[in-house]
Length: 313
Image (cartoon, rainbow, N blue to C red):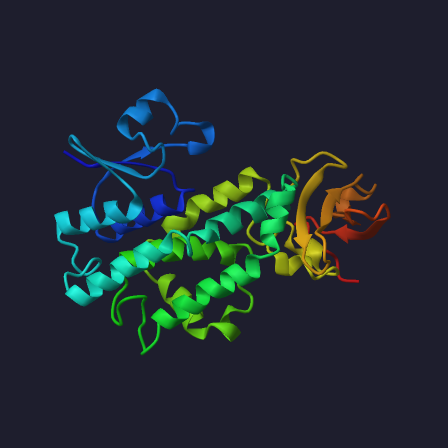
C-alpha cells in the first residue's frame, strides 16, 4: 500500500517532503490539500490530524505530521541513508538544524507572505511594520547559514551531498530570492550564494517549484514583477510586464513596494485607453506613484510594444 501525503505545492514544508520522494523515485499518493480554502480545518481532516496543518503522512493506520519527522521516517523506512545519514555527528547536526529552523529559517515564509500581501495591496500596518525589520531578520539568518557552510562544506551538514535539511532550508530561502530580497547575498554571504546555486542543480528542482508560477499568476503577478529591486528602476519598470491583455482599460495590473522611502510607497502599473493605432502595436501604459500621506499623483507615460515592453526613448 502506498503512503499518502496530504500536502500542497504552495506549502514550503510540503515541497520539501515531495522533493525528497522525487529524488528517490519513490511513488507516493499525493492528496492535494488546499489550506487556503479551509481544507485543513474540515472535520474529516481534523480527525486525521488535529493539528490542522500540512504536510501529513498516512502510512496504513500510522499518521505522522511535521515535515522533518516525515522526512526522517521515510528516509529510515526506505533506506535513503545519503539524505539522512546514520553517522552520529552528522545526525546530531541535522537535529541541531531542525530545532533551529522553526524560529529562524521558517521566518522566510513570514517575510514572503507579508511582502506578497503588501505588493498586491492587501497589506496591513502590522505587515508593513514587520517588513521594516526584514533585512535584519534575513541577515541574522544568513549569518548562521554561512557559519554552517564553513570548512568547505558544500551543504549545510555535509561536504559531499545534500541532506533533508538542505531541502527544508532551500524551500524557505528560495522565496526570498523570488521576491528580489537577496540582491546582496553574493557580496555579504558568498557561501550561502554558492549553496543556493548548487541546490538548483538537485534533480527535480524545477518541477518542485513549478506550482509557484501558477501561484503568482493567481495574483496576476510574475516573479519578475514583484521583485523589489525592479521597482527601484523607474525608467525600466514597464519592461518587466508580462502579457496582461485580459485586463480592462484603466484596471490595475500590479503594485510593487519601493523601499527607498521611510514609509512604504507604491508604484501602480495601470493600463489606459489604447491608442488609435493599436493595429501597429502601440498601447499606452501609465506608471503611478502615490505616497501614503502625499496626495500628489506622479505619473510616467510610455508607449508599449505588443509584448508590453517599453519602447526605448
